[in-house]
Length: 313
Image 1 (cartoon, rainbow, N blue to C red):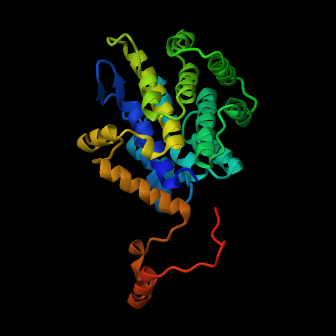
Image 2 (cartoon, rainbow, N blue to C red):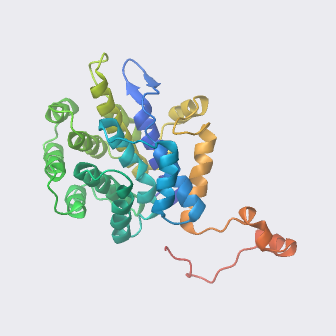
Image 3 (cartoon, one colour):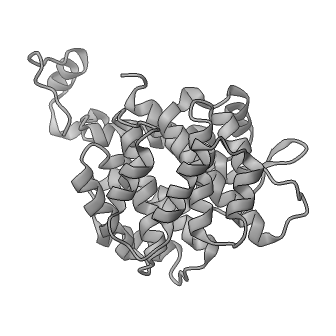
């Protein structure tokens, strides 16, 4: 295995956070424009608390946080980012992955573009975590996973593939997908930034958030944040947390993260707990009363398993 699951889980979440926070201008800086991932944190907390996907619990947590949610351009990306925990939790089973991604989308309004974007992003993350991501076949596999659809996302992804095969640069690709402020164009741009710089997380995000017009309109700013968040999640899943530049991680430590969290360490701790729940690790400190003191001491000292019996769920 190239990178551990915990590295890829953290890479996905921190990648999305960084991609939605970075703005490329004369220097790299953090901007508090949209709290893109607060709904994702609520989803992670629900999965941790219950150990499974429970739509009623997600809805209850979501209504407490945003009782009157209206789907707009900026909310659309929040919904896609909000489904990242589901993509991570069910990444090893494509059938369950698709079923649960579609299931959790019922919390919000049924928008075909959001649905297809969610399926595309979730599937690529799953391929990265299972180390089955082949850049040569990724686009065709993703389109197949999306299935029959009235949206233009498959066509846009095929256009991305053509541009990559032609060796098209960033400016050419931006011109191709900047004609309209559409979510489908933004998703296509994120895929280009990821696939054109597959092994370089830093360059992926700098491409995704690059714009020559630093006095940009709000709509363009939202588009760049959307591109950055999606590209960051994809690259983070592929390259793991080790692929995120150390200086950016230090910036995170000095700047309190958004997403409803208070610190960078809290985000890491939440990720650790999330991976533990996904993997089936039993945390004795959360349920100490179920074992006697002597049993706890023995269990903490030694863990036994027969060879080759531990397998993925």
